[in-house]
Image (cartoon, rainbow, N blue to C red; front, side, top):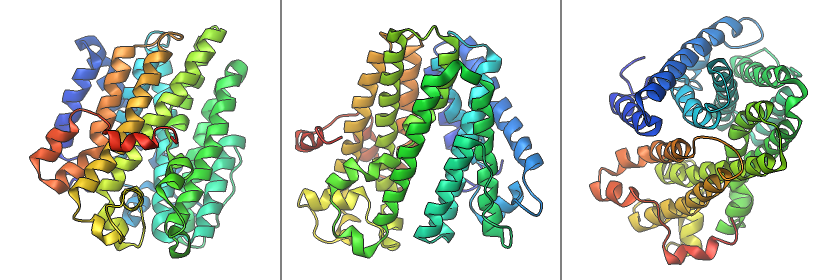
Length: 386
């Protein structure tokens, strides 16, 4: 990996990641095992991409990086994030090999989603983006490869994402009929994710954005949160190892909802970090919609220098985060997993998703203010909507 934070992981992120992994692991044995899984999964998946991508139909790993839709840091980062959620959920019931296979499946999922998202944002029209999402959905659901064509690098890059999506389908099939409930929920959540992604395209339309409010964002556009889909693969493996009692199924539902809220919180943290870029592209994100609803701004560009509004948006994210953590704690009453480690991993996730804002802000007060998740009374009006 390079030292360039735009390509490889920067030294601060590496150091922070290791410290937080130690905090989450709880003991040296767990730390050692998690580190081994992270490194092995990252190396293995990188080699897999080099081996299966490229040629006339798909873009190679190097071509994806040259195009700017894939970065070196995506491999270790996706491996890290997959492990810190899978390990606490699975380690009490699964073998190391089963945990590793789940991490690899999650990497295939998130890299397919991330790279295709970059392609859609950079190169595709709204119609093309929606079509690409349907091809991705069909690959995961049915194991069907539908080519976007191969007459240019963009189409070949999209085909690479579809090929990665097929790996998720292959993994699901390897669990056979032992995971009927979790698989059904995963595929339903995948459809919700696709719907949410489609809703975000309206964000970029000058005709539609004036009609949208923070309430629309909370109810529909924030369905782009990938949390339920992300934990869905963990639950597929967990269901294959459980007795599938009514209590455990209830616990799975709490886990799905908990991850959903935690991952939705990251959308608000990302919106704060990406505000300047979004405004420059004519996109109104949650910062703008919240500012308009609270009467803080009247024009989207007024949000750029309004630090109070940015902090309020972070706290709106915390409203989701804290509800998610509460649901995860409730889940531990019904299904066996490492609750302490999982909650710690959610705090790690929260830190990493907002770190871009810290680097941009350069204001120590913003970092101190962020350390404890909390929700001011002014934002409780939105609690019944989420």
